[in-house]
Length: 318
Ligand code: PBG
Ligand code: ZN
Image (cartoon, rainbow, N blue to C red):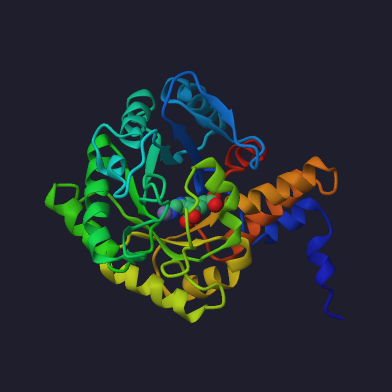
């Protein structure tokens, strides 16, 4: 008889044949930075997650460092929003100041800067708008400016999440022109229009004021298109590609990992986090077990990098 159970007999045997493992270096922890002073605001829809003002960011950075996490993803929430999202590409913007602060305080912590306009625009869309249309090429210019401004502030990786066409190529050129040819681009390549982002939109004050993001983010029904998006971004010069959300899209992660050779990141997004937290708070599931099972699933599907709000907990459990 073929006895599969021979290799499951005890933990030593199981470890010996285990195919996938998690390392602290796999994880990226997202941080929300808000304008103001002495602020540590809990995000109601994301238990354990806070918005910090820059003067309070230190305590969160200490937790990140103590956990052994090597990279953070920064989202800035400006006090002032306008039609063109001008604080996004202002050298004194909230995100630029946060990046500068982090690089001064913890120089070896990798800072990944999310590049998108939705937190900065009064209408909450990821691009410029004319007559109700989200403009592609006009938006690229602003994304290029934002990327350069964040690289100047010290960002180690630029991560465009807007889903405009051609942005990776545009941003790559803009960075190179300013001498940032060593700054990698981590592109949100296959980013789906998803209901899983709603807690994030509370946290980042970035919900669209009208309509939805379906004319730029992907249709969740499409797998082949996701492969195309990823391949396009690699051709345009992306150094790391991303699939987002994670858990409902692991088929995409697997497919992309088989069809490309670029490191793959997954974004285990806010809604995925909050669902686990809510069930755990009700005592319906064992949080640690469920979280670790989710993490190994993302890794097994082919992701190298996992962006997750669970990162500090996971690092503590490893
Ligand atoms: C902004 C952005 C979003 C997320 C990351 N960057 C939200 C959106 O597209 O509406 C979602 C992250 C999360 O849900 O945790 N472009
Ligand atoms: Zn956006």
